[in-house]
Every structure is written in structure tokens, then in C-alpha cells.
Amino acid sequence: MKSYLIVSAALLGGLAHASDPCDCFPVCGCGHDGPSTAPISVMGDHLHVKGEWMFSLRHMYMDMDGMYAGSNSVSPASVHAAGYLVSPTRMTMEMSMLGAMYAPSDDLTLMAMISYIQSDMDHVIDPGAGMLIAANAGNNTFGTRSVGVGDLKLTALLRLKDEGRHQLHGGFGISLPTGSISNSDILPGPGGRLSRQLPAAMQPGSGTFDLLPSLTYLYEGDGWTGGLQARGVFRTHENHHDYRLGHRGEIDAWAGCQPLSWLSVTSGLGFSWDGELEGTQADVAQVPPMPPGRITVPTAFGENHGGMRLDAILGFNLQIVEAQRIGVDLRLPLWQDLNGHRLGQDLTATLGWTLAF
Image 1: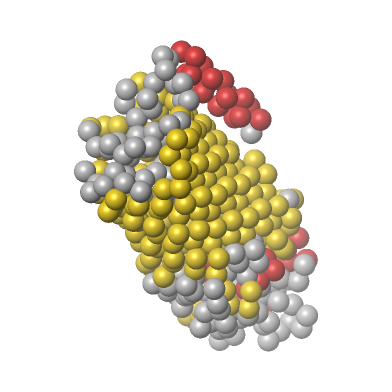
Image 2 (image 1 turned 135 degrees about the vertical axis):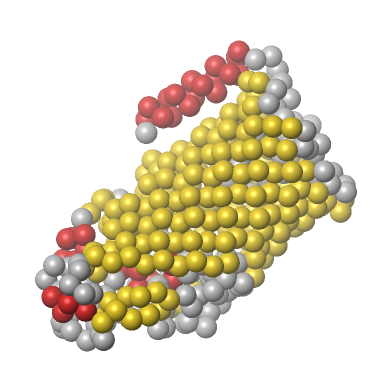
């Protein structure tokens, strides 16, 4: 990862010095008034001018491979030794996001986003848990899948400062619980392989009304642009399965340049913090009937949710035709310190398309 940062810094430095002072093309490819080369995975990074619309379609892929205890990678055997009959081994999530933005004035932009999510998780059973393996038709591995619409997010972006090279705006949003928290799949247990409630990590929704504040700063330099965005998710109550997901905080910082009239390149860092899940996850099995002293799977317990992570970001924005662009970015973890026993992040990739008019 050190080599990634060195190469990224050299690339952006070289682009900045190789090009004449440029007006990096707007992130959405339209005529909004804030120059930016923000990664496509950063939402709400700009405002539009009065009367403008923008529609976006993004697809995000996340890969989590291998268990962690704190900042250390651990084997499934270590998870079993901690008392769990089952250990996750890998999870992938694909999220398709449809978004719309509209500016009723130069100082206010409204934004809405809905998602469709597919999550897959692989598990391995403790070799010593003969009864559970027998209930799983003699196999010591199994997988689960969950699909569905996610929560609807509504946000208002309000200009706070506009002084030439420096721009600042705030975001005030709410997440509505349109996503399911009752998805089930076939799981081994008493009575064999039956349909059972999946843990919160596999549910497409939160089940709660959440507050979504953000603050975004943009800077336009000579031949380059940069930005900094802080955002949060604050859960307001427990859902009807007697839990709430942890609060979340994120900070992204990026800088980029436009080496070609149709291309911008961005590099940056992203930090995220997630709190523990609070509550009991009603209907998710936690204590099996036997053997005594064992518990089911880490995802069933709140102390195994949340943690901190620092990512490196590399992104490209291509303006294919007027008012349209394609963006792609990759996030790779430089460091992660996770709560309890949980899967670690391997990578997150986002591909997106925007249309403005």
C-alpha cells in the first residue's frame, strides 16, 4: 500500500506540473458552479445552478475476505476457539444506486437516492460440531444470500460559503426505512436445513429513521482541485427486530487534475468509523440447543459489528459527451481495526454514470 500512495502522489504531481492551469471539468459534466474531481463514490459533493437536474446510476462492489480480531487477521479455527460454532469466511455485496438531484435555487440542491442490494456470505462450521454438520446434510460449509431494495435517502444541500477558489456547503438528510430487515435464507440448525432469519449484516435495510448530516469543502487550485467531505449516519431508535445498527462517521479527502479535456484523475484517503450494533436481533439464533457453552455465529452479536478503517482512493472521471460522464474508483484498505470477530474489507469498487441537463 505504501507503493500505491507513492505512485498516486507522483501521478498527480506530474499531471499538475505537466498541464497548464486548467478548469477541471465539473464532476457531473454539467454547468454547475463548483469545479471538482471528486471520486464517483462520493455523494453530494456539489451543488447545481437553479433549474438544473442530474440523474445518476452507480454500481458498487464490495469484497470482504477473511476474519479479523481487532487489527489482526485470524483463521476460522480461532473464531471457533472463541466459542462460535460457525465462522464467516467471505462476504460480497453489490449495490445498484439510482439517484436524482434538482436545484430550485443556486444555493439549494435537493437529492434523492434508492438502492438495490445483493449480499452473499460464506460460512464454515467447526469440525467438532458434528450435530450441526449432520443437520447441514454432512457438509461443513454453507452460504447465504439476501437481496432487496435498500433504504430511501433524501437530502438537501445548502450553500454556506462561496468565495472564489473556496466553496463550502452542508447536507441535511434523512434515511427512510424502505429496506427489509426480515430477509431469511436456508440455514442449518435444529430440524435440519430450514428457512431462518438472517443477521443484520445481511439485511438490505436498517429498519430505522436515520439522520444524514454532511459538510463538504471544495478548493480550486491552479491546474488542480481538491475536496474534503465529512458525513455521518445517526440512528434514532431501535427497529421492530429489537436492534439498531451502529452510528457511522466518514471523512473523505481527495485531490485531482484534468490531464485531458475528457479525463480527470483523482487520488485520496477515506476514513470510516462504525459503532457497535445495539440490541438483541430478535429471531436470530444466538445460543444453540447443544453443545453447552457454545454460541452460533459472530454476526448474531452486536459486539462483532463496527470498527475503524483507512482507505486509499484512486478514481477516474471520463466526460463521454456533453452533460454526461462515466466515473470509476477503487478503495483499498490501508489499515483496519474492527470490533470483536468480523470480516475484514478487501476492496470496494464503484462504477457510475451521470446525466445532467
